[in-house]
Length: 199
Image 1 (cartoon, rainbow, N blue to C red):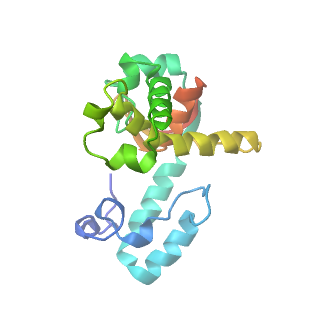
Image 2 (image 1 turned 90 degrees about the vertical axis):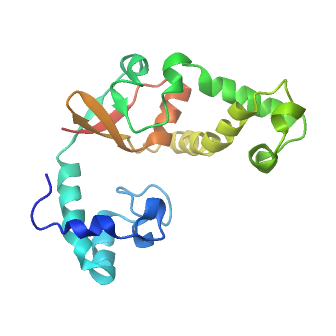
């Protein structure tokens, strides 16, 4: 799919940013939803300065992304297919246990009740043995996801829109390219999402 203008050597560049990419790409989210995030126009300006080899790739990705469309997908459609039709996400457990997030929240509250905090839950060895009445792994998962759920709760309370999760639909499979944690908000609140689908 890549046009000849894209220098495929950019995929071999090791940076100190997320997942080995150049760090100057880390703040790119389009559209930005938090302070410090940059849109594609700003990213292109930075790329021209930092490493112009990335410009054709960024432009190609932007054109591909903009070819998508909004689509309403129900959780009832998604949930039984999270391990087969939907790829590149962290939601598989919800297929077998749709109330998993509520269980994680409950276990987190139990951990707080015995005096643990986020740092202790995530970094203290021996908690499973010390607190057998608490599912520590579920409490840990809640520490990972609770900030996103709270952020999107505030977004809705302020009357703003939640940025949508994005997928590439290829051969009947939805590959997640952005918005994994914001989709957790939809599962937690049992609200059907409108997503961006690129075919």
